[in-house]
Image (cartoon, rainbow, N blue to C red; front, side, top):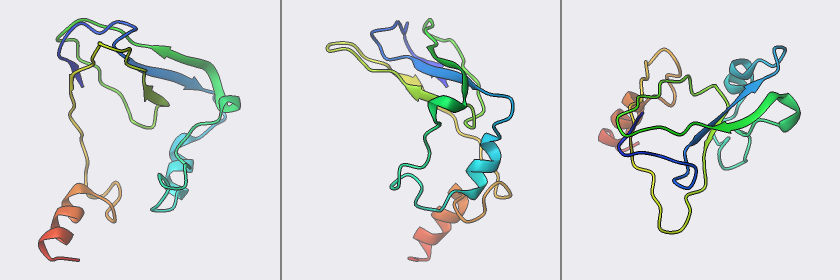
Length: 112
């Protein structure tokens, strides 16, 4: 993603954390049911973290590349502030053929 303006703490910057070495986030992700978001199963437990979440502030134009398996969350945007970003997602059908963007688009076209 790219910050489209300077993003300080009050603008709700993205936050990242480091997990303990023995925690396999990707393995957990692969075992999640399709409705994991509704069930609240996509959160990382505090006891799995080696280091707590830290904000990543930046200047307009800063590019932030990260693996979405890395524990992350948006910060809280203070009243009167904003966080505008340009977000890019990379997805390949082989990653998760049941929920890939291309499969969802095809399902919409076919009215499934």
